[in-house]
Image (cartoon, rainbow, N blue to C red):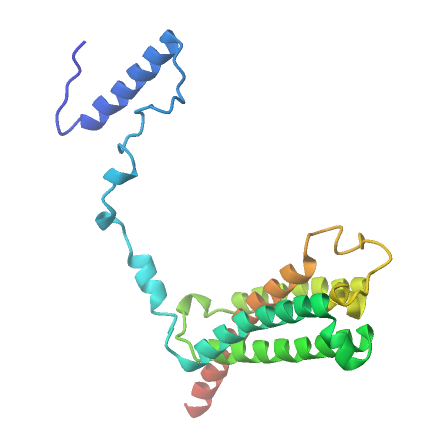
Length: 230
């Protein structure tokens, strides 16, 4: 049978050709998932014309992020430095017991590192907030629903973070196991019975909510000032 093939119905020809090929393989017992299968309608990724891709969305997104802004760079450095710092220090302590020797005991050493981590996190939160206020504004976020969404995320994140801290204690939260301070048994209660790594997920929700709230607050503060000048 000879199938018509013109510019107008070429897609119909290709579809019928694939159906005939599938039918032939089923009748002959050949696997449809043969590694030499030629059912790929594009002939493989090498034949895709990437120049035809619509990059307008990425171009629009780039207008809302200024990668060269100094406060943005400081925030990025703080985000990267904090976990790198405490992981390196904790591993060094585990190998050498250097902080334990300096502070005269594992508990005092763990408390000291924990306080330093808290201070670093406070600075990180501050730098992120400052960086967000210095970035271009996105009109899509200019509504009160975004504010409530951010507040809800921060409430949920705070619930996970605080409940994790209460379940683990100070030393359990701030790398006490690296100092040889081990818990009697694994914590399985809330929130660990709801989600894995609740401290990390809670912190992520907090920062995402924080990214929405200051932005919206600044918008409405500016609108109030404009109304006063009228």
